[in-house]
Amino acid sequence: MSNVSPTVLSRIGRHLHRLPGHPLAITKRLIESYFGDPRTFPPCEERGCRPHHVQALDDLPPVVTPQANFDALCFPPDHPGRARSDTYYVNAEHLLRTHTSAHQHDALRSHQAAGYLISADVYRRDEIDASHYPVFHQTEGIYTMGPAWQQAVIAAAPGPVDLQPLAGRPTWIHAGNPIQGVHDPRVSLAVGQHLRDALEGLVRHVFGAAAEAKRDASPAPAAAPGVPIQPASAMPATDLPMRWIEGSFPFTSPSWELEVFWEGQWLELLGCGVVQQSIMDRAGLSDHVGWAFGIGLERLAMVMFGIPDIRYFWSEDERFLSQFADGRVRRFVPYSRYPVCYKDVSFWRPAAGFEENALAEITREVAGDSVERLECIDTFTHPKTGRTSMCYRVHYRHMDRTLTNAEVDAWQAQIAARMAQELGVEIRG
Image (cartoon, rainbow, N blue to C red; front, side, top):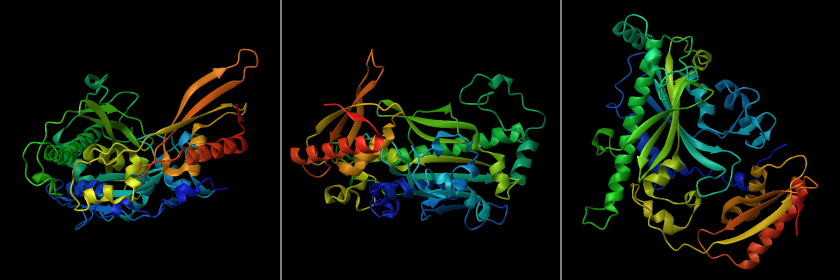
């Protein structure tokens, strides 16, 4: 049975990442311009992969199989991401992709390029706040190295690699973040370095554009506002601090996350790592190694453009869209912010359990994008009965108009009724 809500269904086919003049499309093109520049990656001489050295894909269907979304990527059978509480299932055999990695196997198996950029809308049941939405967008990058590249690495570093001095460094190799047993350590270290160099270059490229847009938005005299998409080498370099921390993903080992220091705080930007060799083997690339990364376009665009709420990306208000119609990176200029209205709902949690994502789904179905945030503000366990009471606060704020008390009260009543009917809770007073 499908658990895909009408709200989510209405978002399929919008293709925000392909709309000219949309912040997500601008962000995607900025990433593609970096990886597509031959100065970033020189032409590939192996596997006859010219002219598509790094091939960009951005129009792949969202319905995939559990095998493509999970099994082919080494997700264990009991991984929580497989649960209906986290994933939208169309039926028992198909689901809405939860990440662009669902297309990794098919891209690698095509043998058309040394690298691929896969951009798409992805779907996850999630909480409600300014940075989470059930439909968002990712760009996945994959890059492979053939036998000649590996042999050159080994020839340049004869003899075994001593990993002991690297133990304890969270950004590198240890028992919890190991080099795969099938990989020559020299090759794995070189792949990791190639990955970090490429992604640090991407960050300088992207945040160079963001910094330029921020300067243009300042009151100081400046040239015409905005920054056009340019080749990677033409973007202004920045001294943006970056740091690598260890990550954990089923489809890579070792794995890392990259953080950047921007506007006074460290921001988690992307996850990456050396591709599990079993994935390469199944794609017919047993003699190749590779790295992969994934980055959320909304997360990046919110930083680049200064957009404070993820719901803006779905707005069709010209006051939003017209600011980016020329396809340039520029700082978002807020228009009227309408007042927030919040309502609380208290209930006894059923003995069978309670899933916040299920409540978030009901809330979105009833009030749509008028819900700004959903938060649990109180939990209480009765000392005699042992029953647990919870109180959730729903923050309502429309992006384009003022909400009336009457419509908010009507939404709140519908939410409470559906909670009792569908979640088995007992609404309190």
